[in-house]
Length: 588
Image (cartoon, rainbow, N blue to C red; front, side, top):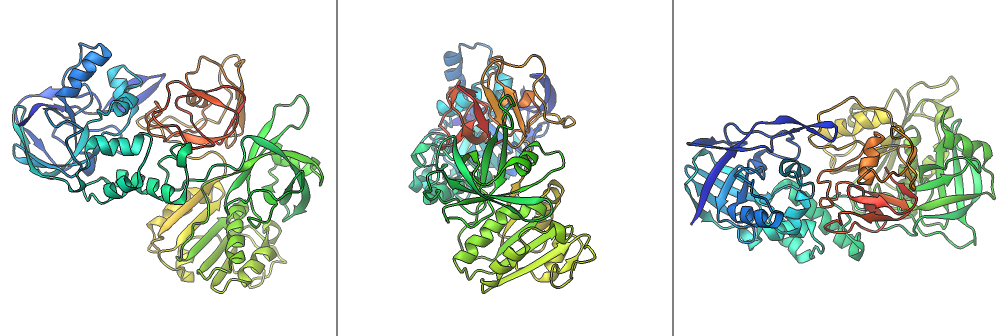
């Protein structure tokens, strides 16, 4: 019979870490006597980061005495006490390779259900003084698991743990953990896991994403394409290759397009509608390279690439391109990339954009028109006035060939010569309220792109509205939002070179942030260099397990130390545990 050895609780505290402050509840201490277990917590317990820990599906964390014995021997530790792994229940029995997702247990007055393995989080390594701990828990198949509270009640150390129900499918905690994090994601096992009602929504989403990737052929033998629901296929070529400028066309007062062709005249590999190209520019022989990404705006699959660029007042790259580039010139170009792509299906499509954000959704409109799609298509666009309205005639022509298409253009400040009803439909800015008044259908697939302010407000407002889109896909120009779990918020700083003397190693270019810096071996990883430059980054485990930090590797090669639990998909890199072998270009 399994037994509850210790009940451990702890409230969040601020802990210094790498020059920053982490808010965490991973420090747990054993308590005596009965403790009330409620739907979200044990009395006296708390979590510092509710986005990654806690909540109804992760109310109680369990770790086993057998794993304590294992790690004492493996790590040479004699200081491990109950609660050291951040668990609430230290138990004798219930090993990860026997307990199944959906199993139910009674302890004292309370009843619990197993929902998922432990989250791979760097904070267990912080508590243990072992940075690799998150990876070790996965690779040694000893993660521990979370419980949902089915029936609230008191529990106490020393009580027996009685199994009252078995989970369907009989998939153990260790199997579920390995299915997500270790190499190989058999389709039949993903399907089985998704049939378990007790599996937590977060893990369900990750498994559905892996299943979608398997069905679409993304990732494949080249590695794990990561947990993101939208996974991009591998790039058509590695690094940069020269392409010839075939045309330069003005689209509006501030937007121009470049049409690119292969130097040998052969058709270029087809891009997916919504993807982007990355250019490497060298304005002068002694100038540092400028690396920038621009969305493809032309018809996919015609053997050419068209990108469209907004001339920014202080934009070094856009200014150089507009002033100096001519037909016949060569550009260094990385292959099309990006997961913001048009998805197949029969649902209505909302193509919503503002300003230069029209470019990727215009490529989607081209693809729908080329296929003579019968889907309901809505083209919703906002700009200042007619002089800043690129692709006006082009978009109208494309909408005209679609049998179920509607367009609506907003000008926020129409010029005197702009004609309402011809050049634009309404005065003002795009808003969710306007979409509702237009009768935009519910359950649509929405694709959104635009300036920073538009993207900060519109996607959240759309999701919260009565329109209830089936899926909202977004593309952000520039650096995306950071995800730094548990870090106490500090004021954001502009991106900058690292402090101190410049490094002497390879160049590391952060494309979306517009920064290139030299590598210095004092950094343990590309992630640490990015953090030293205040480049917005996303991470969780910091040891090559969770793939949260997976980013596009546009050029160059990296090494790994420590080795990731599973290699990332082709054309990507795990920045949390990698170091550059030569000059690298990252889509960050």
